[in-house]
Image (cartoon, rainbow, N blue to C red; front, side):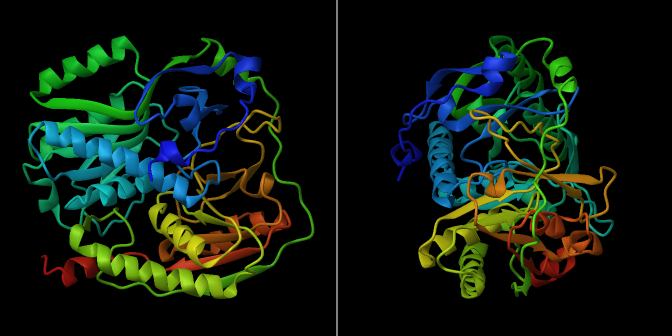
Amino acid sequence: MSGARMRQVSAPVTSYATSEFGLRAEHVSGHRGWRVEDLVQAGLRRNPKRAHLWVSTVLGKHIPVPPAAIFAAAGDLGDLATSALAKHGASDALVFGFAETATGLGHAVAHRMGAGHYLQSTRRHDSHVPVIARFEEGHSHATDHLVVPTDPRSLHTDLPVVLVDDEISTGATALDAIRSMQGVHGRTLYIVASLVDMRTDRDVTRCLERAAEMGVDIEFISLARGITHIPEDLPAQVVALPPGPQQSPGAPGRLERLEVSWPEHVPDGGRYGFDRSDWAAFDRAVTVIATQVAAVLDPARPVIVIGHEELMYLPQRIAGELSSVVEAPILSQTTTRSPAHVIDHQGYPLRRGYRFVAPEADAAPDRFLYNATREHPGSQLVVVVDSPADTAALTARDGLLETLRGGGDDVLAVIVPGTDHRALRATRGQR
């Protein structure tokens, strides 16, 4: 079912960020009935490089959303990418997702396309894993993207690349990624696929010029195109705001822990690369985990499945499986590195904030989660992390689990063994 057909029509709500700060996005065009206002809401963040934040309504990042909505949008974007490839005479591609936000979206797009290989960038540093390429995201809170495939040969093909991101602001990040990939192995075609494309005419011209300089064809596709209206003094306005409200402390909720198994020969996502041949085993493993999770949940209470930063697709798939076995509503979202500004006001998308210490060692120690049970009180929180993030910091007083249950929510921590880069290489017969 297409995302356009899934959407429920509701009365429009005046955007608080528009009425109070003048930040807005104007719809220009859409695919299969998608509109910019269906896909993003105007938010704010404390970043002097970029004070606005287009909060996706279908990504499962800042806002908890039904997994069916996530996969419907990804499905439409995957169909659009398949059509774009066909115009160039191509039937397969390497699909590449951007960390941290678009890792789940990229994987879902690759699934819809039936792509031979999926790979994502990562910000997890592992001294045992060779970095094949890297690029920068200038406006991001965390700028460095690493490319660490188990099999570097996945980048040494002439297949076109479909780069997947949730939003294209200027195209600069995609262009830098393409430049980096061209340095590893030159190819002739790149498709940049996004939920929304907010580039100006000047940005579009700059992208065409950069493509010509690199000697490649770059086609940008999206579910919707828009024009942004961003006040020049917006960063100063945001900096002057008082701190936003955090979660209210209450009687601590219940905390449970569930350790599950994962096949050593199957990647848990695209950080090290994911082949078409991995799907059957991946699907089986997801079903097993969802069954185990469902067995310890209260079937009458809503559930919000929360992923850990780049670990988006696996938690989203678990949420999708839960939707088929649990009658209560199931939603999904993910923690983030981005320090957004919280305002508890009708018409503003980020109405509650959770701030906690990163479970993994990092130069930026703070991590964030937004909304969660703000609009869905009484929900059970299922936090899915892989074993590298199962650290003392995860369970510390200022860690994610205690922060969530400190607000009165019941939390189930699901620990999945992280993909072992070396073991995966060995099982695939790579040296």
